[in-house]
Amino acid sequence: MTYDLLTRAWLPVRTGDARQTIGLRELFERAHELTDIEASPPPGASGLWRVLTVIAARVTGLDDMTLSPDQWGERQAEILEDGEFDQREVEKYFARYIDRFDLFDAHRPWLQDPRLREQCKSSSGVNKLVMSRPAGNNQVWFNHATVLDPRPIPADEAVFHLLTQLYYGPSGQCTPRVVAGTSGGNSKAGPLRRTISFHPLGRNVFESLVAGIPPAYRYDTGGADLAPWEADELPDPLGVPPRPSGLGGVLARRFQHAVLLERSVDGESVVDAWITWAWRDREFPAEDPYLIYQQNKDGAFYARQADASRALWRDFDALLLEDAGDDHRRRPVVLAAVEDMRGTLLPVLRARAFGFDQDGQTRDKEWTVGVTPALLALANETRVARAISDMRQAAERVHQHLRWALRDAWIAINDPSNGNGKPQRKDIAEGPWLAQGASRYWRRAEQIFWRRVRERSFDSATDDFLWLALDVYDEVTDNAGSLPRAKRAIELKRDLIFKARTR
Image 1: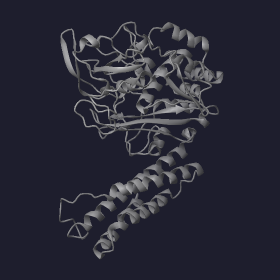
Image 2 (image 1 turned 120 degrees about the horizontal axis):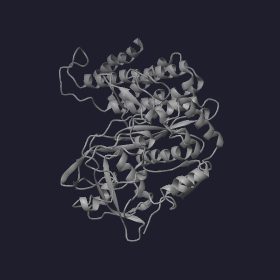
Image 3 (image 1 turned 120 degrees about the vertical axis):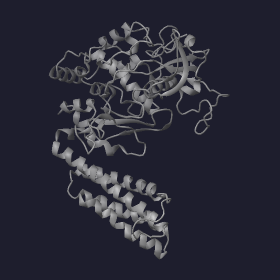
Image 4 (image 1 turned 30 degrees about the horizontal axis):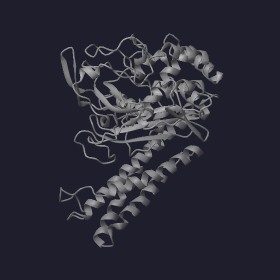
């Protein structure tokens, strides 16, 4: 019994307001008709777009690492002008790998390792596959599936949980696996763990996919350009992980986990899963083309981490500039490439962000998704982009001073000094005002930001944020009561906000 991802209806798509599910082959045949893919959860969608990008690069020839930058750009422009994928190339590609897209194939299940059934003494359980479910001895919070009640997962949903595990899976302890006498019970983190990625979003799926293909010439590292379903043999877990090369290697062959799904009797659901380590040796480093990279104090660059409390607009300048802010953030490679689409797709292109707020090991906090306005063309106007970056930094600076003011006011009220000199007590917590202030400030600061961007009005932007901070300060501290002691501390600390203007 099979579950062929090429023909089975598992991909949720939208055409205008109409929604349906289709197979992978139909997605590429009708990409120019489809408005968007409505995949969930967001981490699974992030992985899906990378997989689809590899296939899109194959059928368009934009995976050719021998093309020069000019040749590659010309080829991409020609593809966009065609307005749809070449149906002959689509059919040729899927015919070549016709037996590699079966989710439950006995020998080559898609993106899975069938050897785990023999190499692992026990399975991990279907609850372990879904990151929002409790597994093992974890508490039941948001999902009531338990070890005693491991509810099956419909196959179409399981695909996205499989992608989430491969791209965002945890490091640390995992189901033990024994390969040729070598045993291990720990794994490294997935290649996208705790990151936020940005993908071009066009008017239809065809435009989104073609605009989202990174320049192949940047990824010629000498290794084999193969996605897992394109390789003739399963990888050797005790060997050296393949060097990420080409779009297939960088986008879909850096997984650190090995996964196997157990189907139900009718083949429509997943009832069990094995999740364990894929490699014992250290992987080769590679930069993902959809991530922002920023500089640490030692000058090394690392991927910007996802933060569920941070609104998307606060990274907008890093989508336009190669050097944004004090941490010298570099924009995603794929967004730097679309800058050349002047007069064609660029004026209508937006960016969609998929984030997963996690720690480096096992704690998963929250996933997020957001879309920017169609303003990526501002990358071609350097002065405007710099002004946007300066405005964003001004908003950050004012908020930092608002935090200091709220924190010091709370401490002063609860300290014998009442704000005169240094606090006498060392055990006073920062209090509840910081969270209240951040929630109020950032929600309204975003409105100021986008209004000024649309109007291209950047002068005296700091003053707008200052007045907002003062309003928020008054709102948050208003519940402190009318005692003279509280009023005095609040008024003394208000001046900290104005110091944000000194820069």
